[in-house]
Length: 317
Image (cartoon, rainbow, N blue to C red; front, side):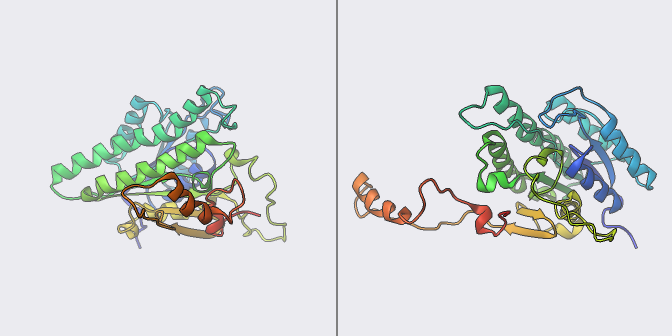
């Protein structure tokens, strides 16, 4: 019996650790040949000297298990290095079929304290990094489709965050980048559908180097002697969804946003109108808007924002 991704090739960015590593291993387990990309900086804020070790170790592990993998240590936020990443997949495996964008950094600070560099660096790695790899992968698939005069096989899985869905007070740069990734994904899904390519985005929750502080209070399950007991926040809970979205089975899943963690997947609908008001005149006046909107929000606590995570029942207590 053939594996779901047998004969396919994939690029996974930020795959030297955490979520990206788990995703790369899962794609390889499902039969894909994998380009393991990681810039290798030790700091979660993107600081420290770059190292080839994390990417090479994951690639070596895949090969040791009988799979095919190569390492790439370039910076996906650099346009040329992102081009080289896609070209490496084509050179090594003949073509690119799957792109999983996961690379990112954190530079948390409240909006009134955030520096320009703290803003720019996070937007650069997350949002521009997603765009760069998507751009070159999309060009590859479009050229192949035109040459064959038929759709090809292409899958993009991007990484957003619940910080975009519900807000994150100390992460205006990160939340904005993750919101931008959702917009990039839906636009890409529409643009590439005719070429046989799908693009979807996930909001994962997992215990990684990036989230060490966020989930510091979340305890792993008590050791009951069972070797099969998995931390509810383990990245391995997220990886199977990525494998599914990369597979032929997900051919009709396109432009979708899914939240995933700890044995749960939630499909998030696009925003819907909660209330609608029409003016009784040619145009609204201040007094008319006051009469309509103030009562609508009167029962909400001061400062309350749209809390999508609570609405979805995904808020962590």
